[in-house]
Each structure stands twice: as C-alpha cells, then as structure tokens.
Length: 437
Image (cartoon, rainbow, N blue to C red; front, side):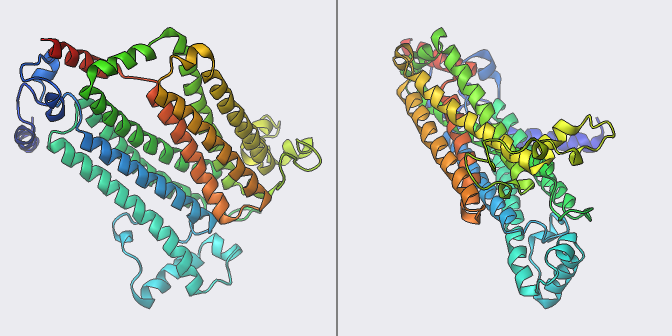
C-alpha cells in the first residue's frame, strides 16, 4: 500500500475506533431493549457497527424526504412558470451566490438573451421580468444544493457517531450518490432546452424531464422507506413479543396475493407518474381539455394518434413508439388510460381487502393505509380532471404533481406495512429469547 494511502487508512481507522467503540453491546438503542447479559449474534458482537440504527437516523431521513417532496413541488412550479431555462450555465460552487449589482444581472441577462427561449418566445422581455424567472430557477438549484449538503453531512455525522447499522450505511451512501446523479441529470435536462430547435418552440427533452423527475422520486422513496423502517424497527424492539405476533400474521400464505397486488400497484403508480412527466414535457395537457371525451369520442382520431410525421426512419418502423412518447395527443391518451387503470386498481385493492378472510388477517394499520390510498387516488383524479378543464393553471398543475408523489407515498407506506425484513425478524427473535433467560 502506498505511504499516502496507508496514512489515510490509519487515520480512518483511528477516527472510527474512537467514534464506534468495540463493545459487546455496541448498539445503544438495541442494548437498551435487552438485558445486560442478552446474547447477541456472533456477527453483531464482533462488529463495530450497531445492530440497529438509532431512531434519530430514521427521523433525519424522514425529514430529509419531506425536503425532497418540497423541491419536487417547487421544481414543478419552476417548470410551469417557464423559469427552468433562465440560468444557462452550470456552476455547482460559484452558482450558489446570486448576481451582485447591475453588472452581474446584466451579465446573466446577456447569457439568457443568447438562448433559443429568449430569441423565439421572450424577445421583448426586460431585465425586471428576467429577474423573476431567474430567482425561481436559482431557488430550485439552491434548494437542491442544501439537500445534498444536509444529507451528506448528516450521513457522515451519524456514521462517525456509531448510530448507523452497516446495511443502513450502505443505503445512506446510495442516497447520497443518487442526489449527486440527480444534480447531473438536472443540468443534462436543461442543456436539452438550450439547443436551437428546428421548427419547434424551445423546451427541454421530455425524456430527460421524466428521468429527472423519476430520479427525484427514487431518492425520495429511498429516504422515506429507510427512515420509516428504522423507526418501525425501533418501535418493534420495544415490544418484541407483540411484534412477532404481527410478523406471524403477515407471513400467512393467504396474504401473498394481496402483497403482490400492493407491489404491482406501486409499480403502476410510478409508471403513471412518469407518463405525466411526458405530458408535462410535451405540453400535452393543452391538446384536449375535456374529460372523458377527446374531441368527438373517448379516443381521438386515428390520424392524430399515429401521425406519420413523428416517424424518423424511412420504413416507419418507429412509428408506434415515437407516437407513444413524442406525440402530445398519444401522451395525453396514455396518461388518461394509466390514470384510469390506477384508480380502478386502487378501488379493486380496497374491495379485495374487505374479503372476510383478509379483513381478519390484515393488521389495523394496513387497513387504514388502504383506505388512505383510496382517498389519495380520488383526490388525484379530481385534480387531474380539473387541471385539464381549466387549461393547466399553475396552482392546479402543481397540486396535481404533488398529488402524484403523495399517492406514491401512500402506496409505498402500505407496502412497507405489509413486509418485515428478515434481519428485523432475527433481532426480534433474539430479543424475545433474551427476555426468557
């Protein structure tokens, strides 16, 4: 090992040796739930990592996920106010500070005047109007930086303090990496809107917009899921006997179809939300503004659905998929179909949960989560329809985007209440065994 690398290795070892002491009962929270002579597994007793993460880590992750929820909604407002292309440079460090003085603002405005959006859409914009859209995009980027610093700093602090289990440390690393990737995807998306369009109005790529939104959703769910699981594990370990009774009920084979239906529903909600991103990127919400009709019927004319102009290949072999993802008419139709399917699936899941054999097996909190999901999907459908009827006003459109993430949250929480990780079960069994000694 090179000398410089060896010195860093020794420094790392000394730091964690001080912050995570080598003790047999090395989990502060877990040891509080067990007697002093409680037997731990060989892996837990020899590891410097605690057996379970501290509840404070769970609270930190849940609060962080709330911040991500907020930036998703604010990002929607940034797009709806057409502010996303106002900053034409990516400066991760120096871009943290806003322009200073008239000279700084003139420089930023000059950069924007060179963009296709200004030349084609906003050629009469004055500096004061530019400042309004600039502050929106600057605030969105600053919020993202704050989330990144807060998450990385919090993760390092909790790990150094010995409050994070090994598996959760890896999850924190993945979340931090996801935030970094999200920042890169954001700039990649903005760059697509800075190219001179050919015969079109300047806008970001709908594919990159969907990737940006999808990554934000994944980071949010990773934070929320990890945080809720840590808090749930802590609550279970306080009453391990009662928790194991719940585990036994959830492991009943009769719940397997219901659990599978919940997981399938989560995937459907995510796909529906991503189809909504395509609608937003193509401004497809302005194509047909009635519901359930699209023109003279439930479906638009076939010529509009499969327009040959969207095919790029001479043999038109790409006609179907390009219309699916690039034709605003088809994008809106796809979203309507997926949204209607999601609504029916949630109602079907609720009806399924009312079957006698399931109603007696499902824990009370699971039944409440199912009912909450019904309320969320009903609200989301109402928001979507009214957004169409009123020609996509900013408040309703932003609420509709927030509703998509709220619905996904509800289904995700429901799925979490239906599962118990094997690692948690082992800790519960060890806790029950120790209390019998």
